[in-house]
Image 1: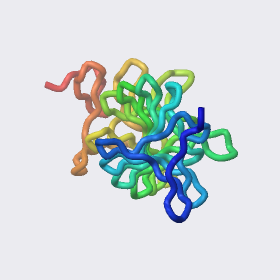
Image 2: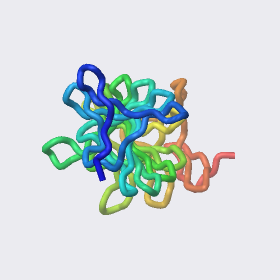
Image 3: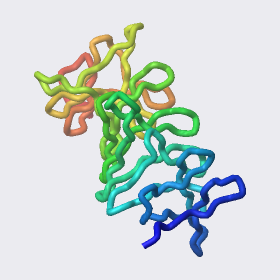
Length: 219
């Protein structure tokens, strides 16, 4: 059987075929599934101009070291058969590179529950602060102490806390192994997006102040 071929434009660049819905599609029967333009492989696009990954033998295929982008110019992660996103390897390092939005801000891949996943390293924001990954309910997950299993705070060079921020933009306190939030040793308070300080809560949702035992409940 002859190998299917992509059409070429007058300059010799390969072009994807388009279905009745206006989506470009891959010829997955080829050894080289990606079309070539100006000597480089490139992704096909759907009718909304989002680049899409091909799936060959139930496995997503990627162009090495290159993410597909949506119509707005944001990278998109490929996903496995279970709906888990995964990052693309970094050339020559054995590590992974995180996808970035159109403004160059990196973001984590998510599993099929919505939990953000790290791959060997944290993302650092442009201001130098760690961007902590969010769990499935949108709360940040701090690094955990191997001995106590408590989440731990990271201090910046100026002595301030590198706060984890939830999906609503609220700074969140780190938690003890038992689920109680705790105040950092430098006396800082977590703040909401307006800058108003927020108080820590026990695992059952009771507010407590830094100057009072957690056993005393706020009424």
